[in-house]
Length: 420
Image (cartoon, rainbow, N blue to C red):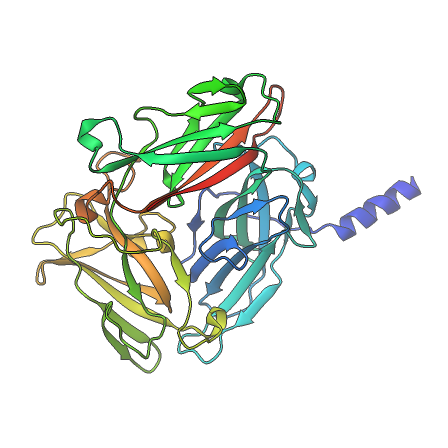
């Protein structure tokens, strides 16, 4: 009895003990207004998706700023998920070697900036947290002191067992030939024992990393010897959209051709972008972009994480009349969400939608999105940006596998398909 009590005491002493908020959604979302510039990608590859190859030895890096400018007691928690982003039935001990909850240790104050902030970095896996299962994961960051939810981010661990190839074609639907793109692909599963591929394998396809319009739960259309065929006529179809708009504020001391004006005041910068116009009726024009993404960077070789400043950036979209739905600034820096901070206000005096947003020095892609009329409808960028089959997009294919009797969905293949 004394030995058991001693062992229990040692266990409780070595394991972290704290509570965390449970009212979170299984999506990419930033819950606090003072949290800015959230980036989550493979370390060293700022434009990559948060996918960790179990065999590569790479790490994922989460980076964000806290504009309250104080070191906070931020913790992270990791939850294993099914292919549909519901919690899996696995316990922490089954998918984590180490702790599924721990404190974020890397925090640094900004240096020589008008607006002070604290920068945080988290690398996964690390000495406290290592992953033992492939599949979907949700990263939750919260403030342990006041039980406040900070942000959530999706990521994936893949065990690469499949060989995938694909093409982007014009849809068979005549009304969508000029405006949409269809994704067709093939999967070689040689070496993977599939008893019933139609039930064991499911695919998900994302356009430019967006989960809000992803096509999910796709079974194989045909099964051949060691090959799965996904050649649906009309199921894996996306609006082509347009090349994303951009602006470059990698140096707030220099105005470039994407910025109308930069003003410096005692404690902040004010940036005015050129007045945008709707592009729905314009001809398609190729322009290399980041497919809606953004990078935090500086032209003068500063340390961008802690030396880049923030600015109030004024967006404006010319419109002689108001839309029926609300208009939002939309892109990766809005978490691909229609957020209140990015909702534009119609000003009849200038015949335009306007909004100011606080952003860090960097290079940004964006679009204007109109809220759908129906509940839970995905945002539409076709009315403001236009949609073209020729638009350069990239598609991420994810292959999930759950053999008969298994308790979770494995991720056994990923493939990035670019249309250029």
